[in-house]
Amino acid sequence: MRHDVLIVGAGPTGLVLALWLNRMGVSVRIVAKADGPGTQSRALAVHARTLELYGQLDLAGAVVSEGYEVGGVNLWVGGEKRAHVSLTETGAAHTRYPFLQIFPQDRHERLLVERLQSAGICVEWATELIDFEQGEAGVTARLRLPDGSERSCEAQFLAGCDGAGSIVRKQLGMGFPGDTYEQTFYVADVEANGPPMNGELNIDLDDSDFLAIFPLDGGSRARLVGTVREDAATAGTHDFETINRKAAASLGINVTKVNWFSSYRVHHRVVDQFRAGRVFLLGDAAHVHSPAGGQGMNTGIGDAINLAWKIAMVTRGAAEDKVLDSYQEERRAFARKLVRTTDQAFSLATSEGALARFVRTRIVPLVMPTALQLDWLRDWAFRTVSQLEISYRGDALSEGEAGEIHGGDRLPWLELGEGRTNYEGFSSLSWQFHVYGYAGHALEDWCRAQAIPLHVFPWRPGFEEAGVERDAVYVIRPDCYVGLADGEPSTERLTAYFGSRGIRLPLSG
Ligand SMILES: Cc1cc2nc3c(=O)[nH]c(=O)nc-3n(C[C@H](O)[C@H](O)[C@H](O)COP(=O)(O)OP(=O)(O)OC[C@H]3O[C@@H](n4cnc5c(N)ncnc54)[C@H](O)[C@@H]3O)c2cc1C
Image 1: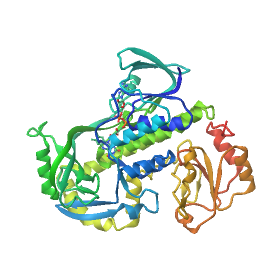
Image 2: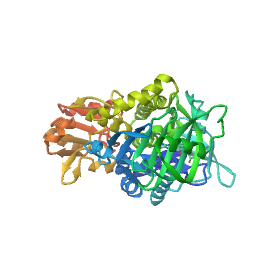
Image 3: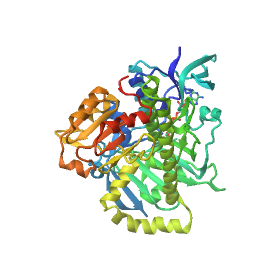
Image 4: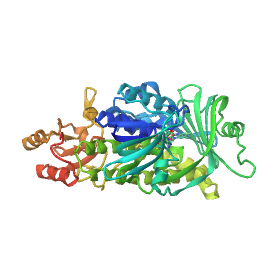
């Protein structure tokens, strides 16, 4: 049987891709070399932007109710708490999810697998991609099944969600330029007590090794993430005791039990291309970076959603193939920026040089408490780390500006009163138009003729503060980024916007 998409890999990236494609009516087959969903807690942090996208799939509620909400971040230097940021207060104006959601990756993957099963799709575990060939009409992949036999599989597209060691990437012969950090990272899930066990995220900038403490449940369970420097004396010998002594010395944390401990080397790399014909690379297969900002898994999920609606449009003949090129343009640019910024932040936090140490232990503690009083700085930091700030301005699918919103920006989340928001219509996973104020009859008629839902929101003064222009039209993509922002709506411009992007009207076709 030929499928629209063969998904290789059932980590968070492949599972979300399968869910979204299935919701949009695309037939998928999903295989994974692993025997079953991951059993390690690995990625803990689910950011606000991911929860917003999950809201479209009716998944956010389950992640929030089964996880733990972190409402604040503390910065420690020399055993003293030097700065505090309330995520709840900072994020409240920007998103329905003004917190850092903790939801361990093993439980997260199980939830995604269950949702797929209820949609009638079973992950084929212990099924490995051996190689593939692509032609004009599709891709033929060779799979090794659980009984050791080999079988070929045909699909229109192949999605390589097969992690950092991706065989899809290797077979495409793509470069994966970047580097490996000299430090060794460790993660430890522990039970502990002491001042940093306060239910918030605690980051220690003491000496050249980095340490962050993520609460797992608001009680005595926490994840320690840190670095240890490899040298001749410690190479390959670090164990939890050495690390524990350092953590205790800098933060006064007293670990009573270690449930899981692992150390590993980390790379920062981005693949040369995210698309090669009918084959796409997503998630860790396309980019890897320092786990310090908790961005890796969230970025893979963002890749999956960015690609899914584009593939759905192309497979049902609603858009030309060139729409798929925007996946690489949008997501590779973001991955490169992310790798650069996490690298800079991480280097500042861990660099051994005397100057870096002076900045970290003397300048940062002096400047940070005052700087974090600035609303705009706290806002920017929250929006950046939570991935609300991602924008595709200037890219092929983005056009125009109205108010402070440009084509390519995430649509601002707005409260409408009585508990309602402008994000409610997004579970349709379809294109839609938003007007805040008044939409003329010409626009209403045009939207009806093109089968595009038009949502008109009565104007409220708070909208202007969020950057929205009264009576402008905002063309919203299925992933709730703005495609076109037009302050002087004209149906000719709307027709031209879709036509020039290879998107066929009426949209329902
Ligand atoms: C200790 C640790 C802590 C982390 N913390 C965070 C965090 O807090 N926040 C965050 O965002 N990220 C974090 N990360 C990163 C995060 O775990 C990864 O970014 C995420 O797992 C990537 O998901 P993925 O689906 O792209 O790849 P993976 O999860 O690696 O999944 C790859 C899949 O491909 C399958 N596969 C591989 N080869 C083949 C083949 N030949 N044929 C078929 N299937 C194949 C595998 O079986 C697997 O199902 C952390 C990582 C580690 C190791």
